[in-house]
Length: 80
Image 1 (cartoon, one colour):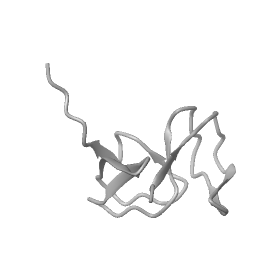
Image 2 (cartoon, rainbow, N blue to C red):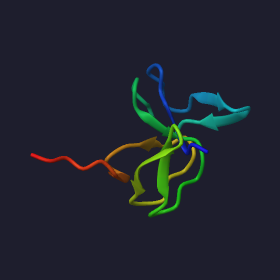
Image 3 (cartoon, rainbow, N blue to C red):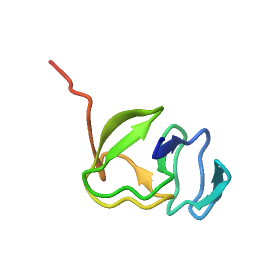
């Protein structure tokens, strides 16, 4: 089960979104295309998008928080 969703538009802080019948209040503004936590994620837990791990939490993440490089590290490796 996914732990994040992708914003399909820009959202202001405190907007309430409904995901799978659950209301989630956004902790801050979220821009189009960015990730939003829909469950509590513990430090080092895998972050799941479309059923696949995209990274690990580097700190506790609450539902409604923006999920990005400030609180996760990617599973994707880049080669130069």
